[in-house]
Amino acid sequence: MSRDSDEVDRIVEAWVRQRPDLDFSPLEVLSRVARLSRHLDIARKEAFRRSDIESWEWDVLSALRRAGEPYQLSPKQLLQQTLVSSGTMTNRIDRLVARRFVRREADPGDGRSILVTLTEDGRVRVDAAITRLVDAEALLLESLSRADRDRLATLLRKLSLGFDA
Image (tube, rainbow, N blue to C red; front, side):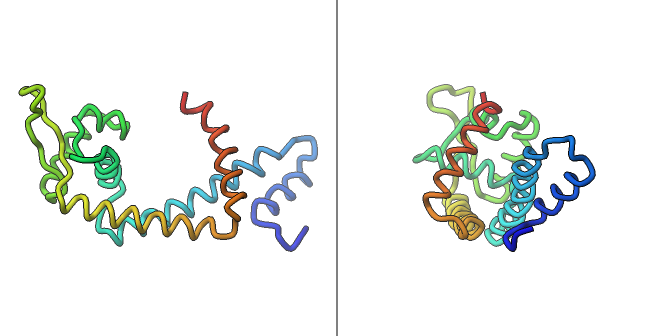
């Protein structure tokens, strides 16, 4: 085994010895994706912890921030972006209102509806979190050249298109 082998190489090599009849190439890819996912989860949790937000708060606050000024979305739009139930979203909005990260406002286009608006405190918090997140994720990828990162992003996009359809 080469000096550049990783834990997945060791696992696959052991399986090949035990089951030479199987093609273990899927494990060589997806076991690495799974292991990298764990490292990413740790990095994200730390970035959010340092910004004093939870990952669920990040989901809502980042959706509002990405919407651009005036940083407003309807609860339905938030549901579509965060893939949670309406009851869960109501609870999340309530908790974010209590932390003064968002506020509810009447929708001027439909008096029966509300819009969720990112407050200045929420914007400052989500901007700090995205800065920390980008820095943390860049560290995870520092061993790859820009060209390798671009190539990997292209391959992962190609793979994910089949799941996101």
